[in-house]
Amino acid sequence: MDIRFLGHAAFELFDGQRRVLIDPFITGNPRSPVGPGDLEPTTILLTHGHADHIGDTVDIAKRTGAPVVAVVELAGELGEEGVQTFDPNLGGTVELDWGWVRLVPAWHTSTTPKGTVSTPAGMVIRFGGRTVYHLGDTALFSDLALPGARDELDVALVCIGGHYTMDRHDAGTAAGLVGARTVIPCHYDTFPPIETDVEAFRADVESSTASDVIVLEPGASHSL
Ligand code: NI
Ligand code: MN
Image 1: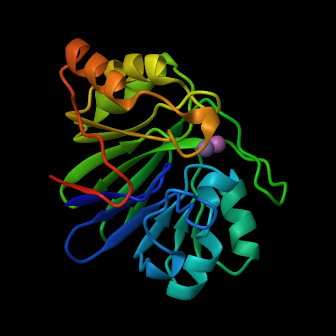
Image 2: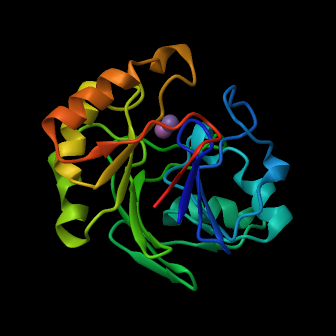
């Protein structure tokens, strides 16, 4: 299974056949390595409704027919725009032909550009024989340890940029709580308020936890 970083909090998971696209903020992302027309997802997953996560979701979903998994209120807005959706709430699991995705809590806010208020989420994703935990946009809280108590986590996708989410120091503590084999940092260096020292994050996590940190430049992939 390949994980390709598309900049900010956007990732594409690829099992050789199917593509799961997460938080596709492409247009307006100064560090996006692709255009929205380059993406051909099987399924789109959204952690929450902020513009830097919902991004190009509606256009990509309409063009490709890919269904979108999002928390119920956000799925409702997307459904009104003609997108096919799955609409779980926190704690709920959606079974798909490629695996499953479960919504878990994230401490953040979530209002869409159109004004829909919903609860933000993290996502635990079973795909390609691996389990990936995208933390979403979150502050540090101790329940970040709970997904790893249920499932062995191969990879955690962890926001580290501060200002809108936890910073690299709290993210280091979060990495210890999550306990994934590999940590891939995200949600940093896209805009000036979230610039951070990713190499310092890597050094802190690798010296204080059992996790390896893989730093991906936008466009780069990690295979596992
Ligand atoms: Ni956000
Ligand atoms: Mn964000």
